[in-house]
Amino acid sequence: MPNIGIVMLQGSREAHAQALYQASKLLKINVVIKELRTVGDLNDSDLAAVVIPGGESTTMRKVGGHEGTKILPEIYKIIRKKPFFPVLATCAGAILLADPQDGGEPLLQAKVERNAFGRQVDSFFGEVQVAGSNESANCAFIRAPRFTAVSENSGIAFLKGEPVGIREKNLIALTFHPELSETSIFHEMLLSSAISNTGGDQI
Image (cartoon, rainbow, N blue to C red; front, side, top):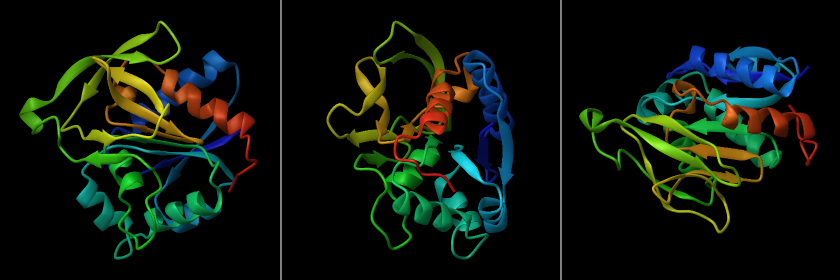
């Protein structure tokens, strides 16, 4: 029964929890959701995977960074130490992985541009195609960032042919909000990684 942590800084945290429960039912496994607010929560939870929800990246860095709870630098440290540790990062979460601003190297090879799809009024729902399947989902792009460069063969989700979701090892980064759609396929990917975890990495 894997423990899955959700970083409780901003974003649709309850929606992510519901998507994880939906994914667990489809995969016929049980999961335990852990709310991560402090470094203590992170270190005491025996986690198999972490979700970094969206929000506003500047605010998330301030609240969860070195001057705040310090939970983000601790997560970055874990990812660098355990490169196969499963993480699902959505919207601002993808920005944080690509540009952690903690003095260390980026956690993703991909490059991300903030608010590249426009301002809040330009937010929209778009039909996202899932790579390697016939599945698609109508997903929310809210002040969405954009991948300006991705590593070869890392794309797992596409909007009109443009990569909006990538996977590098067990890091899944999406520029949209899958938790606000009817699909749980990306949360299923996370749980599958948490179960199999080819690198054996776990907190």
